[in-house]
Image (cartoon, rainbow, N blue to C red; front, side, top):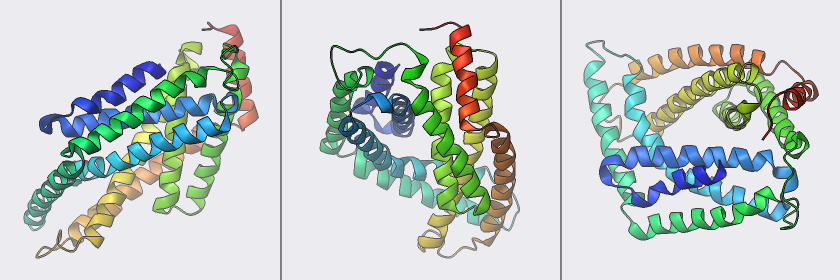
Length: 289
């Protein structure tokens, strides 16, 4: 799975103008899965390897995130359903300006061959080092055992951090805390996807629930990014009234957050030790690798 995701991520090497947005999306999604896998075996990986590889993957994803965020803004705007005659001209103008911003930021990064080559080199280096992820303490004579104990600490840590992030966001639903919860929920989602072989029944349902939750938090994040851009980029809203857009965003974010907190409370209701204990039982009773 790790090898497959690196191959997906390295598809950015052949990016073309026409499929730039999709290539960036595929690469970032693969990187998120890789970071989730690295967290799954974190306790068996040397600390310096974990920190270096996690940081490099995070930096690449963050760099490409600028392109992704601008790309989705127009779609996010359309998703608000602002068809009111008074709002329509403003929405059309905003969409055109957002598209122009996307093309500028896309070309600044992906139009620079040396820059793309640097990203590819970084990913290839981590791919080579990822062989260490499958070893105990980096020892080439000690392949990571195919036992639940090899992944239990990493899985519990991700579940525990997501549960804490939910509590923090519920107490103070700021953009920062909601985004932190989203990231941790995504790590758990990708880990559950990988481990779904253990129990297609229970884990399959959990995978669907996590997909729904992270999609809701992702849409909320996109709306937060759009709001931030509308407030900070004065040229973007010059000559138009953005208030109808802000009102629609506030309404939609309230709906998404309400749904996310309800679903999150159900997903994270179990304590970490009980959660891991149930998965351990399924590992023993079900098929193994």
